Length: 381
Image 1: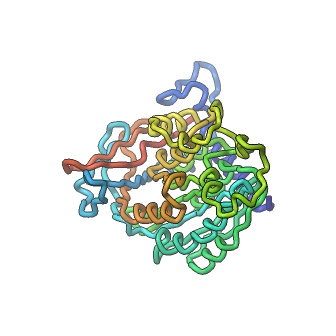
Image 2: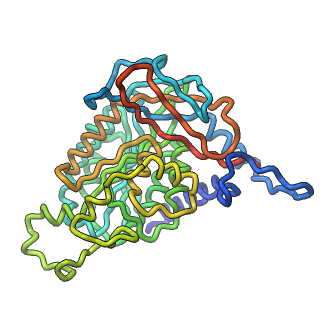
Image 3: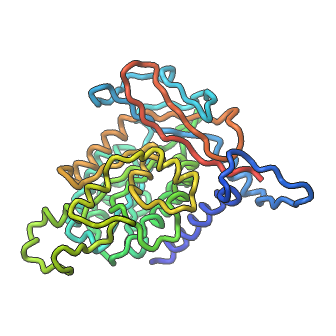
């Protein structure tokens, strides 16, 4: 790992940790009253100021579809109703797919997905043309046992495409959460849109297996920070099982494991079978799991981690195990990104620390609305 990225991980992890201190033991709904005679430790003044700044603006991407699953593009701000902890909020910024994107492309470079790499290397033009758009910018981060910043933010499409085309598989590790922490840290510096000035939508797009090995960061901590920084996570679930089935050279390769033995770890607590990959995307209440992950940041989330990350931040997860290729998944996500509504508000009357529940509804019959479920605010000292 290079020194710059190592420092970025340390900074990101430290930033995540300080946002959760004092709120994890019993997850109170609001600030805990201090005991008489006990001195309450105060956060440094600059830390308290930073937390206040972070909740000065809440942005939520909103996807609205009709009964046929088609995007609806003719709504105005007056058609939306947004509540924070049940309190109606005033929308200060409204946009339909127009704010330019700041995008971090996070790609697993583990040797376990070596057979998928030819397909991954072809995705650069999709990211630049379908996702970034003419006014966007992107950075590229690869991860295995190390996290490598391969390309800093750049609006030059050729540069982004060359970086992705030149990616090479590395070691067999997958420090997914550490890489996500680095991506969130990078996006935190990009200017956001407000009622007074234009800005950028912050988007983290992940191409990875739903596996983390060796990270020091916790998924719940990363998602808390992403929510407070108004970062939306999209994910494309890579499948080594699918890669094995579609590889043209499968018969010529000598398997590293005996027949019936899998080369990647199973889901924790599960028995691995040829249908394990499909089972990873079964019917579960991902929304409830996403809320739980943010509320209990220090606890381990074992299953559906890419779906949870996307759901917690208002994004979308697409698996590539069945008939959906990586290219098709990226194309679908790009189309959604530029068809989403972006709503911002300054929280008013919502109470103190703890989990804030966001509800978005539309004044139109027969529509389906998807938005981020909320955010966690550390209680003020």
